[in-house]
Length: 319
Length: 270
Image (cartoon, rainbow over all chains, first blue to last red; front, side, top):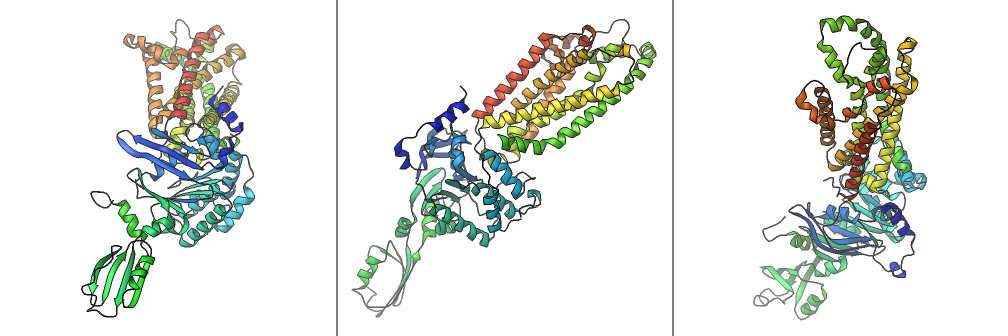
């Protein structure tokens, strides 16, 4: 019996009940070596259904390698990856029935138009995607009969997004999807992804831009030099992130000898003003300030940028 | 697989049609030239006797005594232009996947679909064989049109022509199988094309040289053309089944290795 037939039989087998609770994506000690070079190593990820998961890292950190391993393009040299409970290397064509994948630096067949793409993808997926795809094209303002070879980069990106989303996949994997898109289309895409997630789809969103991940994702993993260095919800990250604080005391002389509490790092004293950085949430600070005499207080939002940069930094310096 | 076949058809129909028309025209022209060539053959051989060796090398047989019109019919099936057209078409076709798709970066879109690599490989194989049949069909039509005015006594039996075509199609399968193998091992289509083109060129040269340069003789078995003998088929009226078996074995082994390598390799476009 060929592998294909065996794999197809496998998908017909009843899956255990626990699959309902099974994460959509799960990697265990996943690694990929390119000869002597490390692509990724010992990556453990778990992404739940309906989650918008950000995968953040600088260029060359291993984001695309991880995605390619999840889709079965690359064979892991260590560990394994499961998508919908299917081994991503051995059963990649089965799991891709439920996946929409947008590659980074997307290349399209030059003869594609929206209609041709929907016909081609529909035939490959065994479904009529024309109506859903044309509706998406309208939302993204893309002409249905314009040929790919005459499209701008942004238009090609839109066409690729339509090909990825038209079959309403349960898992959407996007590798730096906003490159080439104008800000308005970026907003439309973000809204589209939020709507899909509300309906139960899972989104795996790779990016090197903190801002778009921060605006869209529930949880973020940061990858650096092939390793996961952080994997938390954005709320937890915000709690950890420092905030810029400016306190203006009533009496400048009185605070000259005052020491800041351990959760406040003093950056600069300026007469009756303190410029400082606050670790964690503002509650503790407010409690401490209740015992002081202050005239004014400014607390900035959690500074995720600094936190991410700290993660990006290597022992030798910034990446 | 229907979607993949649609894509292959859309991308390959024009090239296949152009190669088919070229093959048809070449067959018509060669058949038109052949009677003139035959008329002048006697004079030419008297003046330039080595032509006989070259002709024998091209036809893959030793020409003894008088060269008959029927044996000369083999010339239209071994002419370098004919072989170049067939090989060029299949080398272009068989290196489309996986090397071509990786090279142009479209494999991400292709393998993002719920199809296995084996299915894509099978689909390309179907396309290659189907387009091969179209080209051979056009070639046969060209041969038929070109030989309309040929005297009946010079005309080879229809079944002999079919056997020559079967032998040539086995060469087509052997080269195609090797082209799939090269494609499966390369990330760049140009490299895959260069390797397989080098192989068929060497094959042609070894087969040609082996006819009149003894040091090249032991290597003749390595040439796919060593197993393509239209002149012998036209002379005897029967196929050499050993040749057919070897050509098919080369094609099937190359194709199967290519399939397994394609299914098991890591695919990376960056």
